[in-house]
Amino acid sequence: MPWEILYHEVSFNKQDAIATEKYLKSEMGRRYLKNRLKNQLDF
Image 1 (tube, rainbow, N blue to C red):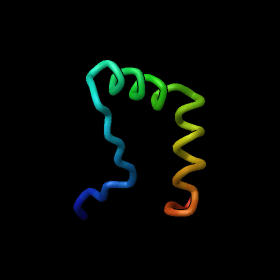
Image 2: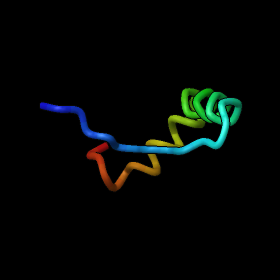
Image 3: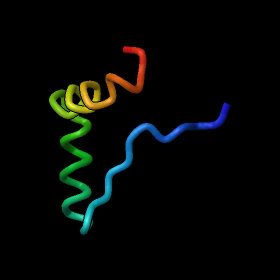
């Protein structure tokens, strides 16, 4: 089965992208993504 993109985000510069990635990998960031994707996935 091929991979499916569930979430896509664009950053305007590398520093912003790194900060966002660190946040999304944190506990609060994981909660944010889980809540944001709740309707798309069967959690």
